[in-house]
Length: 451
Ligand code: F0G
Image (cartoon, rainbow, N blue to C red; front, side):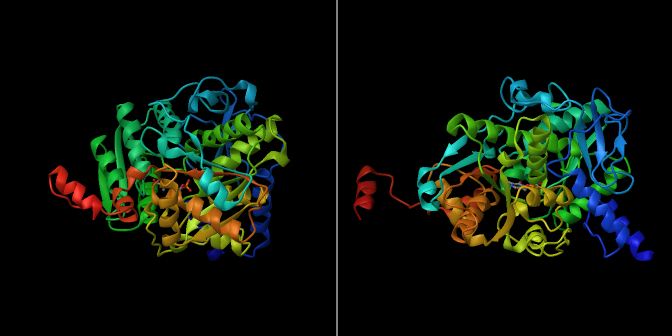
């Protein structure tokens, strides 16, 4: 019994996703898989729904009113999902950017800078090298603060306004803090960010600082920061805008919608596979939710759902471990290290949503070394696409899976690059060539060039 209580407490903090060899909890796991399976029928609105929107627990199915008070998780400790009575098809989308997809979101418009509508780059040299039917790079670094987080914040900060909360907060490896600071500033709201001291790239701290957030540098890693900010949020000290907040993932669903529409416009079909870096597994969860909803609305055949393929750095790969070992749980890694500081995370809080997504789409997860990440960052830059190290993990992972024959030569693949090169200028400079010192004369420069 003590074990059981302890485990439930751990789940309640959104930490390790642990199901012991206990019959009753195995039953709980089966219900997770049911509610998140690709062939689950469209949900029916419960009484608590407001305007056809509600929150549902992915563990026990309990439903909650969406905006009558702040709630991040279910009373049973399970993660929550935003659910809709009306699910859109592609014909329901109009306009540009994230809010083009308002029919799939809880509001018609949010606090916007604006965000989304990012490029889906062709990368012909890399496509040739990988030897796949098509390779595209969805560059989320082209969002207003330079990362995909803006898609989540335009929705999340709108929800914060609806809930009339006083202060916004997040833990962050950097990009979430930059985005929250900008959207908080735009909404005239106070913003508090907790960062792992010494482990956040310079561009991201500079953004949070200039946008006016209060920055706390914590003596601990990202997971410690998230534990602390969750405690503060649960006590009502601030409104949490990490990806544990289900509304963040609603905005991030639009990455999937843009990739599908972009591929369809170019090739007449959807991509076979999406390869993405994984930290907290929020994007993995959001993309899977996007596809599930499209299947439920009849806009997408289950066979058309892209295979979700996650990539982590070798020094921070708890999701890869869980997928490789066929576990229904992710064990928290206490010690994590990687040059890709954005994904230096040992406890992916969205694993209970993301693992079913990887499995149901026939996907996998793979770990890559820091050197493979840097090589991939250089090679993307060689195609004109400037990304930060965590983003380059997607190319590094795709290469590895292509070499291993997991990705076939007939596949159309989309790589997700999540953050801009300038986010981490030190990593970019270290990966690039060194400037050469020359005299301040034309003759001197010419002599140097002819050397
Ligand atoms: N790539 C970048 C550039 C990121 O900043 C993050 C997460 C990820 C990938 C991982 O995405 O969590 O959805 O699996 N950064 C968070 C932050 C943790 O605080 O900025 P995920």
